[in-house]
Length: 265
Image (cartoon, rainbow, N blue to C red; front, side, top):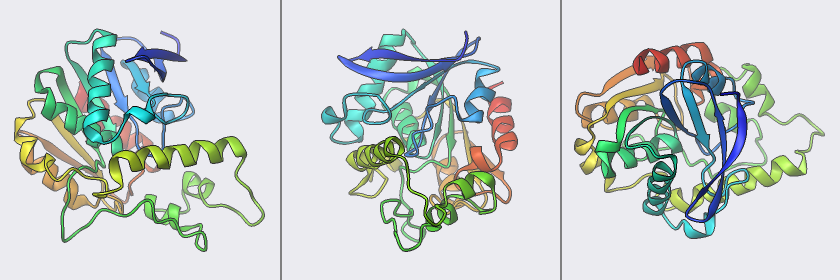
């Protein structure tokens, strides 16, 4: 299947989806960054081995339905309907950050429908001694803060691209996408911040083969979150990418894709 961007109707809502590749279906759930686009090389790497589906969450890119999303439970309902539309009794899931949280919630709600699960830098749980970073606390006086938060090596080309240069103004279309992404993320992750206090106690219900894949120097969801997820999900494995921050699929794309594809088999 040639890489394409298409639309799927879910509960009467248009869902924009990047789709491509051949083989066993694989569902990719994106982060608050909204990386459901073929511009992202890690999606092409996954599609080289699997039939990849990367839908944009409601409110991201051109996907509709954000008005019907009040909390994470509503977002999980949306994706259960999506699984039905695609006709999948079960599917392998890779989720990064916010997408990892959604994947974990799905694996708890319908354990029989998630075959394999990769949680990459996932939020969704809380460690009091190591709180998640507040991604909504953007300081306009320090535009370099975003790259420092998301990357271990801020000289990385993607980190540099996220650091505005003097006199640069974000194009209107990108600004709109960014603001919509933050608003959509806030629907499920504003208060409490990026987690569900009830999720931790339910993770023992997960039956999927699970890989917790973490950047060693993640400043959004520190490595302790990977360890905790791995300890709470039966049989889960933890793999750490050295000298890497939160956006592991951008900072260490070869290592990230290699780890995911090895685990998926």
